[in-house]
Every structure is written in structure tokens, then in C-alpha cells.
Amino acid sequence: MRPECFKPDACDTTRIGMSLKQSDPHDARSLMNPAALRGYTHLVERVRLAVSMDREARLGLHEFTAAGKTYEFMQVVLGSGAPQRVLLSAGIHGDELAGVEGLCEWLESHAYMKFLHRWDITMLPCLNPWGYEHDTRENGDGRDLNREFNSSHPPQEVLFVQSVAQQRFDLSLELHVDADSAGYYLYETVRPGADIGHRVLERIRTIMPVNLDATIDGRSTDGGVIVRHPTFGNPNGWPMALYGFAQGIPCSLTLEAGRSPLQRQVQAHLQAIEAALGLCS
Ligand SMILES: [Zn+2]
Image (cartoon, rainbow, N blue to C red; front, side, top):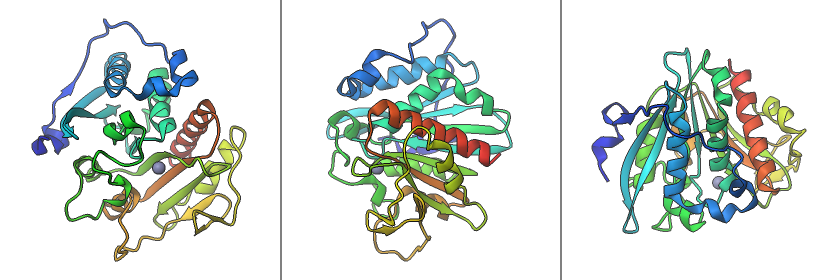
């Protein structure tokens, strides 16, 4: 690990020319055989190629070691100088493929471009590379990274996220999967007046049903929205959204795609991203 490289301004970013061959965003492997996606090196190359297609896009690679193997965190920055800033992240739970796949497809399709007049976009496509490769929720040390954001000794994956989340963002969208849920739902961690969760869910109903249970995962739920009240004295491990809120991000949505084929989970996540960006503009 190179801690100095966790300061975003100090990191190398690469601008890659336009000479590389364009990737196929509908590569059959991606949706027909999820196991084929588990090579992290392949994922980095996929993102690198997609970034190379946009002259203004930048890819920062931040090297670290997990369980004896070297990986590179990816930080993609799209746009420059727009009035609002969004942080998109996926793969903090390594076995939740749809978020990683969704961000890659959104990047490859250039669908983000219609938002660049309003939004600077920072994308962290896969926050748990070891877990991604090994199809596990936890990292190589067996830690659930989304419970480590108030740890006195955070894992290096969390340190990386924290270094990014300390920048100013107006919105954070975290992509997850809950295979135990029959439908889509979300956690909302927001300042008063910044609640958009129900309106986001309205936009994805045509793709995936919303989980309307009164409680989900033991938490009181209203129409698929779990309101997360920031309680900074909470002895339980902080999730990323709580850390972001403490850093001043006024609206974080933790998006949970329910049990469904991968392609439908991906499409629901992409619809939620675009709905949130539109609602917050
Ligand atoms: Zn998750």
C-alpha cells in the first residue's frame, strides 16, 4: 500500500489516447456467465478501455496488497467543473456483482454524458477487489468493509474510500445486492429536505418490484425506504453512508437490488442512478 497515494490530488491519473479498440458493452460473458467476470485484472482493463474512449475521463490507479496479492483501486473521474458532484461506488461487498457491472456498463455506454453539464462524477467501480475475485462479502482479512468506517484501524480499502469521501460531494450512491429480498429497496441517509428515496423507487418499479415489507433486515421500512438516522455514538460499525454524512455529504442512498437475474439488477441500478441525478439537479 502507498498511503501517500490515497490523497487524490497526489495520485497519478492517466489520460489514454483514442487509439484503443472500443469494448463491447454487451459482451455476452458479462450477463450470461457472471463467474467469468471475477478476474479483477480483466475488470481494470475493461474500465481502462472505457475511460480511453472519453478524452476528458481520467482513471486513477492506487496500488495496494491484499492477502499477498497486489491490486489497484480504481477511481474514475468524469467531467470537470460542473456545479454538483456525485460519488458512485460499488463492490464494497465482493459477492454483489450487479453494482460493479452496472457502473462498468454505464461507463461503457457513455450514458453519463448527458449529466456532465450538471454533475462532476467520481466513480469507484470496485471497492473490494479481493472479495470480488473470491466471490465473498468480506475482504481478504474476513472483514465486512461496510462496518469499518469508524474503526480505529480501518482496512486499507476503507482508508481509500475515506480519502475520496473527504472531498465535497452533493450526493453519494452506493450499489449493493440483497439476494434475500424479493424486490428493490434503499437506505436513505440524508439531511432534512434532501429525501429523494421514494421518488427514486418510483422510477425503477417498471424494471423490478419494490420490496414493500414493513421491515427489511430487521429495520422499519416505509415503501422500500429505510431511513438511517445518523447516530454517531452508535457502537456498531459505521457503514460508508454514515461516514459520508459525517463528512458533509447531504444525501447518500444505499441501493439494494433484490433477487433477480443479473441483467435486471443492473438495469434497476442504472435507472436508480439516473433518477437520483435527475431529481437532485
Ligand atoms: Zn452489500
